Image 1 (spheres, rainbow, N blue to C red):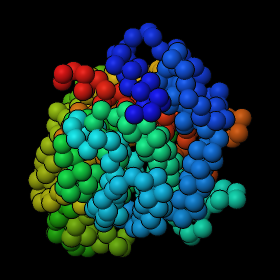
Image 2: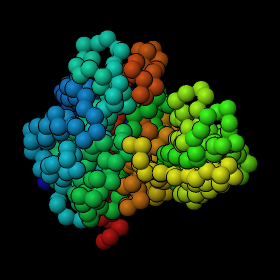
Image 3: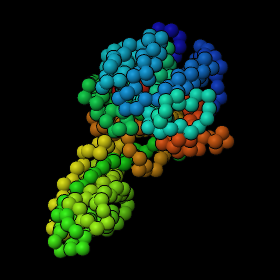
Image 4: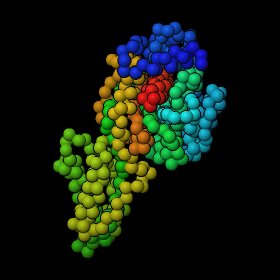
Length: 442
């Protein structure tokens, strides 16, 4: 065991919540990695490795390569090839293909405890409108949600962890996941056993909510669960001049839309945020013909599982009841529309606190925030249904540079200064978790 690994191991025998770690601003870049002295903290070691000029340039090159070649869900073959190429060069073993295009790597002892880090890989069907040297080369596709950065940060963490692998008191599993934007990638990876033996998982998402160098999360309910619905209401068509000879599905659809709005405004606790939105109505082809059927579709969101599934149940009850009132029938589908039901993202309080302490050491206490609830959804929630874990927002807004456009915008630009921050937090979380878990089991 080298001196670097020995010093890290000594420092992680101290609980991470102690005050023995000095807060050093991550923004101060270390141009080279030097062997630390006995007064160095784990944070200085991790950030030193993350901010090494060669490593930073390496991460930027990877992120730009992936950004130029965006791939949609389950089409991430070139992205997967980049990941495998870099893991090969690092000497990190991996399994591939997993769920079609996914990659699962492992660093450490190969034995328990196991902790997982996850990054999503897929892009969006958006035409990039930003003119820059590394603009998307694929017509109609763009990394407009930061997944190119997520992959890069996890590769950066792999580089750090591989350099200090002798200090790892267990095994780190690196999950490079396809198809997050479709909400199905995590489930596919779980079905292929990526969580086997894993006792904790951690994930990161770059966000515009915070400036670069600031992070945020919250214990418990964090991101909303998301579900879609489509309802076909059937009646009997006829000429619009004689509605008495028809059973009008347009009327049933109209009253259903209005009644659905009452679920949140009149039935739910206003202190428990929920959303029901009808965003699609289709019915009829002529102004003077009552159609046989009409269709509505929309989305619903809530933060607790109880509220989420209660809202879903009421949507079905309301639509069927309104259809019956108007002598129609209703068929409701909650599984189609290309968007599966995603449960709420609920951070385990113990893992959240561990991630918070790690974040404080990397970016400072003043830059570690408690996030408000977020109505966005993430299929990372499926991992959290299986094992304890936590999800973290990593800020990348840079007002001076004009990095202010929201995710899923064709003008989205990511501040690459976030790359070493995410890599450092990933690596520090895994390293410290394994140390604490091993110490607690002794």
